[in-house]
Length: 110
Image 1: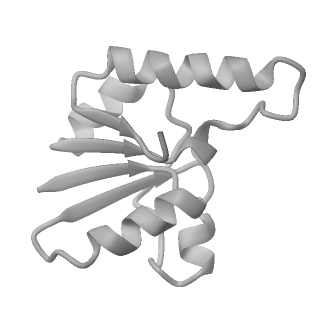
Image 2: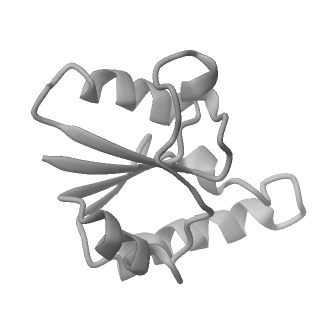
């Protein structure tokens, strides 16, 4: 099984630790930084792709990655959480990603 993990913050790192227990799961990791929490903690050496994923480019990237399942760490999408109205914007972006995805997509922690 091929799993695309978008974001490797606290929740993504916890999910990654569990996924790594199964040798039959191949995890492809995308983060908006080359040193997300999973790298800093030594869970992985590096991310596979450094990109910001949005509803606009998600399916294009997914066709390249070819996942069976997409897992999204919500922290990966909290860019505007400190801006007034940012949390609502982030939530709507997450919903748009799930709705527009051509692949099964699960938001971690929800």
